[in-house]
Length: 196
Image (cartoon, rainbow, N blue to C red; front, side, top):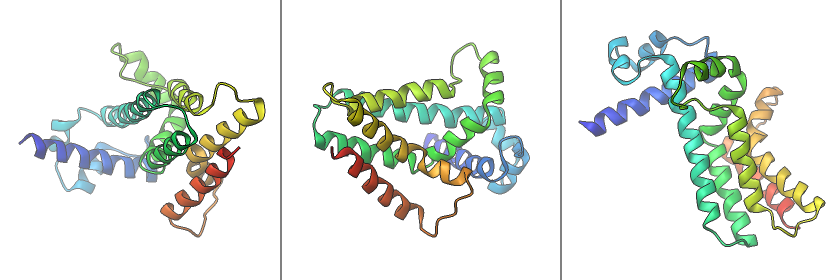
């Protein structure tokens, strides 16, 4: 039964993320999420008490995944191969659902601040915390002996991977390429920046 509950919970999160991306967080209701899933609102309430709870679960997952990346990076020995592997892992993460979640965080700061004020248990995360984690990824990828030029190249490589898909969408830039193709090209360009 637990796996069925987990599966339904994940379906709810995926559909909610699709709708939040299509219509915006404020433009999506629990009723619309339930309708898209072809379930009752009561079935939805069994897994999530509110739309805010769904949003929080998406954000917490993103932070947990970025944090796991940082923990993994701390355990590695620095090398160019490590830099490339870290870049690949960042790309896998941010060319997945994370790019939609990052956009939700950017577009819904007032909602997140309100949720943070009402959530004493600190499950609400904000853009500042995400920036700090990304900053740590960049630090892990940067040799301690790097000059300013090298540090900027590494930072730009990581930023291109993390914010490339989001920036294109925000600028209305519709590329005639699949998301996988964009990821492959973005990683190749970022690797060129790393090869100092």
